[in-house]
Image (cartoon, rainbow, N blue to C red; front, side, top):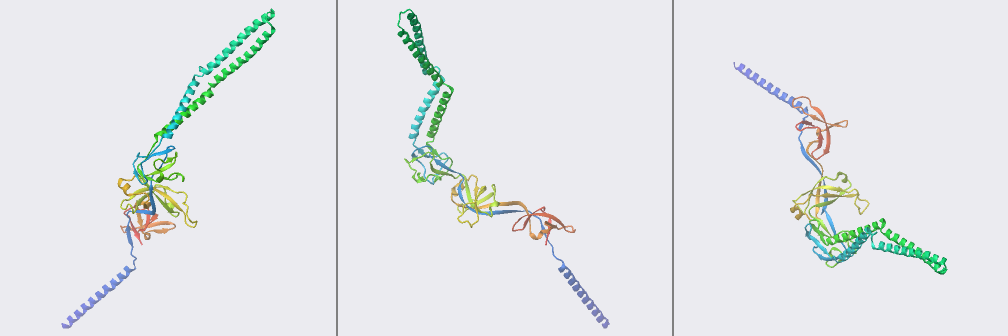
Length: 419
């Protein structure tokens, strides 16, 4: 009995050892098979916003700069502003002395009245005094000639009767010839007087009247511009484009004589500003009019501005050396500034520009490992959650980003395989 129990214990121990060895060997084979299977990662397709920007540095300039010029030749009667002073729309800046213009306007008025009189005379020229005098002179000459003709007939009769001498008849003949010339001259003078009232002279008179009216009206408008006003709210700045011989802004004082059209100073608009920046030739073709720009600066930190590219120069800026690359000027305009922005944004400040080159708020970006290429085409492998074999789908790559490559052809929610 004791031997049977020993045998039974030995048999149980041996079976337990075989079972443990079998489990260990099976686990080793299973681990070896799993180690040979290459793991596969999956990625669910989602949308995200991507933005590509170009950073530039520029300076703040007035959106509008209007040069105030002298309306006419004269002296400055009163100067009411100084450089750097803020002004409002329609505020009076300078008053000019109108003495010279008033003298010229009175002369122009006199010329205008004379021209009006000439036109009126032309309208009634046929009934005028000059034509009437010419008519009377012709009538008188004809009366004298007729009287001489009558005397000549009588004298011939008396000569035939031997009552008068032949010398008296000869005198009358000479007198008739002279009077005939007088009649012809009077007729020519009458025709000349009538011609003075013809269409050509009337047209000349009307044109002279029109010129006189225009000259008088021009001088009258100049008088109305005695007071030079600000075209918009802004700040007084030094005028550009003035003559080197003319007075500068600091020299424009009361009593200084200025010429018509001479720049006196400029009014820079503070209602709207622009930013001028320089762009290298490698980046210029990425910019175009209408691109959105975010504007910031150290001088107005915490108060960003929004703008758009207003113009991109077609010609490069002059450079100091021929070896450097070309640079182009870009102008960025801003909308009308708010009161707070006008108080903090000042002309000449530096500005940091962030030009939005590309923006897609619903972009699909995949890692490069998820995209396969074959014969110039691009594919992704779609993972099947139902246990079927994965299938490929053609996609179209877009812009490369730090997170991966933008693709088109997928919809959110798809699951793709990533090697």
